Structure formats: C-alpha cells, structure tokens
Image 1 (cartoon, helix red, strand yellow):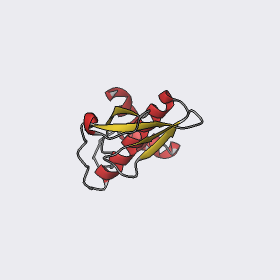
Image 2 (spheres, one colour):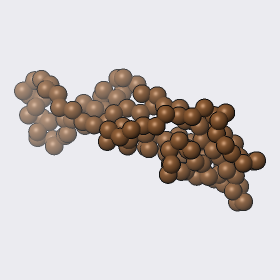
Image 3 (tube, rainbow, N blue to C red):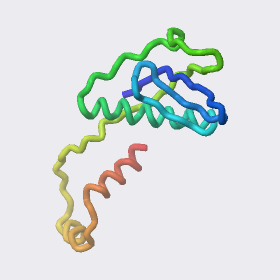
Image 4 (tube, rainbow, N blue to C red):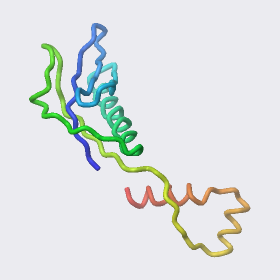
Length: 123
C-alpha cells in the first residue's frame, strides 16, 4: 500500500537537516544534505508505517501539505513510500525428491531460495 505524508525539513546550523512528520509524532530523521535527508525521510516513513501495519496499529491520515505549520526557512515536502506486509506465511510447495535430497545435503534454506527467486522474478 502506498502512503504519502508531508514532512518538515529544518536546516541546522551545520548545514544538515532534521526531518519531522507532524502526523506521526516521534517519527524523526536526519540527513547531512537535503538529498540525504529526503532519502532518510523516506526510510523513516517506511519503517514507521511498516511497524504500525505489521502490529495492526492505527495508521493516521496524512494532512494536506498546505495545512502544515512551519517556520520561515523550513521546507515542507511530500514523502511517498510503499509498505508491503512482510509477515511470513506458510505455503506448501512440491519439488522433485532428488532436489529435496540435494537441498538437505547442502544445507540450503529452501524458503530463502524461493524468496530470492520470487523477488527477482516479480521485480
């Protein structure tokens, strides 16, 4: 699911940036440059909303960027992220017996191989 939230970027005296999400109290990030701060803001948003989703907690509605109060010199920018539920589910799969024996002998994680293959295929 896609989430878009306004973030407030505050330039610090050392030219770094602190980023806060008014709709997500406590969701704060930093970056050494504006570009880095935007990247870190997206990462923080992904982790924050992902945590709420995985724990079945309420995900607050995002405010309109125009309604966000900020001080002179601060920048309000929309940050977008996509959160996918990563909770593992059990699936039954069938493979040839000889493959199963080789997997067991080699100590390969069949789940990891399947996840990697599906990630590559679905990308």
